[in-house]
Amino acid sequence: MLLEREGPAGVSLRAVARQAGVSQAAPYAHFVGKRELMSAIAAVGFSRLREMLAPLASDPARSIGDLGVTYIEFAKANPGLYTLMFGSREHIDSGDVHLSQASRQAFELLAMKAGRKGPNAVDDPGPIAAWSLVHGLVMLLMNEKIPAGINERLPEILRLLEPGIAEHTRA
Amino acid sequence: MLLEREGPAGVSLRAVARQAGVSQAAPYAHFVGKRELMSAIAAVGFSRLREMLAPLASDPARSIGDLGVTYIEFAKANPGLYTLMFGSREHIDSGDVHLSQASRQAFELLAMKAGRKGPNAVDDPGPIAAWSLVHGLVMLLMNEKIPAGINERLPEILRLLEPGIAEHTRA
DNA sequence: CGGCGTTCTTAACAGTGTCAAGATTACGGT
DNA sequence: ACCGTAATCTTGACACTGTTAAGAACGCCG
Image 1 (tube, rainbow over the protein chains, first blue to last red):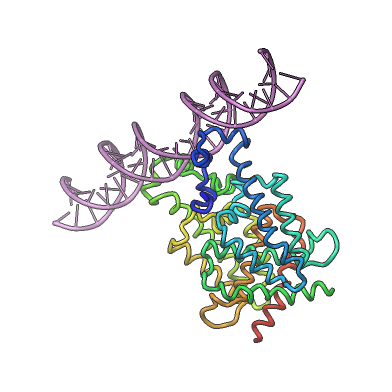
Image 2: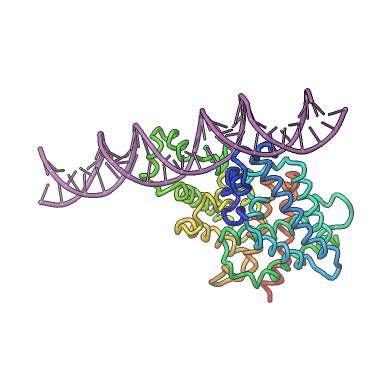
């Protein structure tokens, strides 16, 4: 896909039109603008992520660390898509309904594992910390801020959060 | 500044040239291209971040959590700059010498607090986890993936990592 | 069959990064 | 003091971008 070769900024409406065999302004019959196209793509990205995570989340034998590893695998397999989903507020409309709904659904999978039980897990520190840790790891890896060599130590890093969460949940 | 009003993508060479009172192609006498300009800006961003963090890092009375709070304050005060520093590989040349050096220096400040002592702290899980957690938190906040309301609970979230790090350092 | 909405095309607008050619300016060595 | 060289700037152009306007085909429903 074009997204993965060039990154989100490399996607031009005209290029996707050419690739579809239609002409420059045709996309505007389907999307009001570029941001809406990108938001739609990002939304299916969240759906795919959720599909990958879902079986692990409902399996009691799997830990948060396992979820994290799968999460990172998704990001490494689709770096362009992942960057689009989380990066740049420029390319995406964060207010888009489908998009924010899709991202919330993916987040709730994490909350199941890392959070206090019950509703409004949204402001529960546990899942937020877990998501932040994993997301930060992915971002720093992608932007080469940390050496790519730590790949094997990822489970170890992810486990660092578990004592704190256990302590917090108990309280 | 223009960066903060429009975000990294809103910065155009022509606009900065206009603002400097010179004409479109003048910047090319100082930078080989836009990416180099942006990389230079990002590098001074890392320097500023390091200056903010330095006093806390050398003060034994301050915890990793304190560093994290200051880090997040920096990001919230300069969201455009922060996005440029970490976000988009499109606008920045990660291979840039000044840039990668500046980011490494900022990272070493974290490593002092959160890591095993001694050299090559780069592959020590502690500081990497700390940085990832804080960075992920900032990113998710900026892109409105998590509600802005958790601001007061930030110290609590950052503390979740401390038991794990303590355990690991002891080993 | 007629009309309407969807999809498409072509053409144009303003804006962008970048390069080439040449003018201007500043400055250091003789 | 002067001359040459390097740094800096200007103008003009190229190919590209997102977006809009005006209109041409097309299918579908009454």
